[in-house]
Image (cartoon, rainbow, N blue to C red; front, side):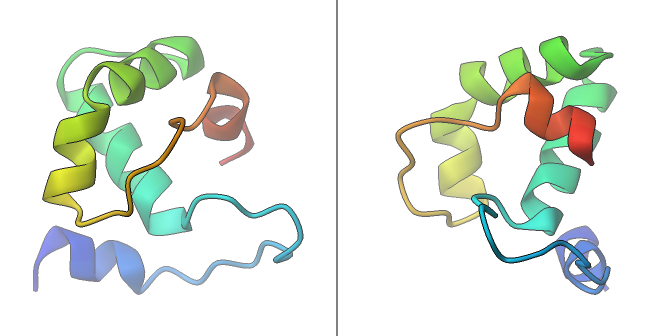
Length: 76
């Protein structure tokens, strides 16, 4: 099974109110950023911002106006 398929299997227990990013997307960005040496909430947000276009294309995400902020990574 592919990594993304595995991440999508993780239950998301968050309330739908205010949920802007899917759990699997944030987890995938966290994993990719960590593997590239971006350790910590702010560096992960920097990674997502720096590679936004590539992540949108790779993950087939709708084009976003912004990437997850450091506080989004901190909450997960």
